[in-house]
Image 1 (cartoon, helix red, strand yellow):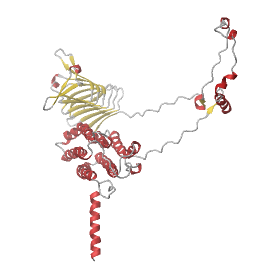
Image 2 (cartoon, one colour; image 1 turned 180 degrees about the vertical axis):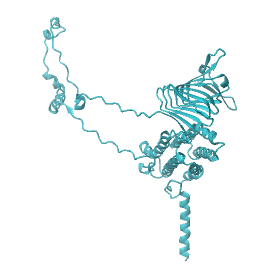
Image 3 (cartoon, helix red, strand yellow; image 1 turned 120 degrees about the vertical axis):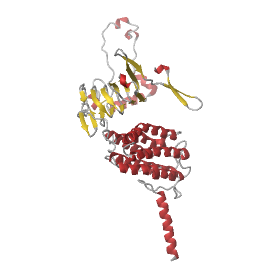
Image 4 (tube, one colour; image 1 turned 90 degrees about the horizontal axis):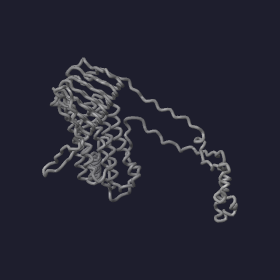
Amino acid sequence: MAELASLVQRLEVAVGRLETMSVPGGSAGVSAGGAVSAYVEAFDEIANGPVAQYFTLSQKIGGDVLKHADMMKQAFSCQRQLLVTASSSQKPSDAVLTTLLQPVSKAIQQVQAFREQNRTSPQFNHLSAVSESVPALGWVAMAPKPGPYVKEMQDAAMFYTNRVLKEFKEKDKTHVDWVKAYVSIWTDLQNYIKQHHTTGLSWSKSGPVASASAAAPSAPAGGCPPPPPPGPPPPMEVSAPSGGGSSGPGERSALFASINKGSDITKGLKHVKDDEKTHKNPTLRSQPTSVRTGPKPFLSSAAASPRPAASAAPTRTLPPVLELEGKKWKVENQEGVEGLVISDTELKQVVYAYKCNKSTLQVKGKINSITIDNCKKMGLVFDDVVGIVEVINCKDVKVQVLGKVPTISINKTDGCHVYLSNDSLQCEIISAKSSEMNILVPNKDGEFTEIPVPEQFKTIWDGQKLVTTATEIAG
C-alpha cells in the first residue's frame, strides 16, 4: 500500500508539471534538463493571459474575427516552439536559422492574406488591426532592438483599433474589450522582450546547436500545401554553329591541344613579307578584299530558333458594383464611370468605395461616413457627413464638400485635393503617411485658395517633451 500511495503521489506531480508546461494550441516544450526555461514560462503567461482573453472575446464576436483569431493562435504556437528550441540549443548558422523562422513567417503571411481576401467583410477594421500589427511576431529576427520594433507594429494597428472603438463604443462592449485585450498582447510582449531578450532572441550557451528539424510545423489552416519544388532544368543542347564556326567535340579538343603546345604554337604561322603588308604597300589598301567574319558564339537549339512572343496573362476583371447591402453602400470596381450617384440615403448609412478608377461619385443627403479605399483618379462630391470621410491607399483623388463634415482622414495616399465649403471650414484634416495633399478654401468671390498640407516636420526636445512643428520647406 505504501508503494501504491507513493506511485500515485509521483503521478500527481508529473501531471501537475505537464499542466504547467501546456499552452493552448501548442505542445509542451522542455529544455535539455527536463524543465521549461524561465523565458518560455514567461511567454506562456502571455499566451494564457491576454492572448487567451483575445481568443475568448473573438469567439463571442465570431465570423471573420474568430477565423483570424485561430490563425493568430497558431502563430503564437509556432513562436513558442521557436522559443523552446532557443532555450535548449545554441544559435545555428544563418541558413538553419532561416528555416527555423519559416513557420512564424508563414503564420504572419497567412494572417495578412486573410485580411486582403476579405476586404468587404463587415469586420474589416478588426481584421486590419490584427493584420497591421502581426509582423510584431517577427521580433525574433530583429537585433539589437526587438522591443522598439514591436512598439512600432503596435502603433501601426492604432488607426484601426480606434475605428473599432469609435464604431462600437456605444453599441457593444465586447468589441471594446476585444480591442483592450488585443492591444495588451503587444504591451506585455514588449515588457517580456525587455526582460528576457533585450538585444535579440536569447539562445542557450550550452546544449547542441539547433538544427532545422526543430522547426515547428507550418500553419495548416488557410489553404492548400505549397507546391513541390521544380525539378532540375533539362540538359542544354548545343547545336553546331553555322557559317564558319567549328564547335564539334573533336575540333574543340584539337584547339585545346594546340593551345597546350606553349611557345611551339607559333611555329605553324606563315611569315608575311614586306610587299604583302598593307602599311608598307599602299596599293594593297585600294584592292577589294573579302571580310571574313569570326566564329559565331555557341547557341542553344532554343536560342537559335525564333521564339514566339509569350502571350500576356489575362488580367482578372471583377464586375462593377453599386448596391446597398444592409446599411452600407458598396461602390466597387468602377472603371471610367463619371455619373455615379447615390441619392436615396439615410443618416445611419455608410458609403464604401473600393478599387474605382477614373470615376466620379456623388452622394446626396446626410449620411454617417464615407470611405474611399484603393482608388485612383477618383472624384467624390457629397453633401453632409456626420462622422468621418476617409481616404486610404489612394492616388490622385479629389474630394469636395458641399455641406458639413467634422473630420477628413487621409492615410497612405499620394495626391489628394480637398475642396471645402463655407460651412465646413472648421473641419479637422488628419493625415498620415501621405503626400501631395492640398486643401482648397473658398474665397468671397467664389474662387478657391489652394493651401498645401505639410509633409516634412521638425521634432526637438524642449527639456520635458518632444515638440514637433512643420518645417518651412514643407509649406
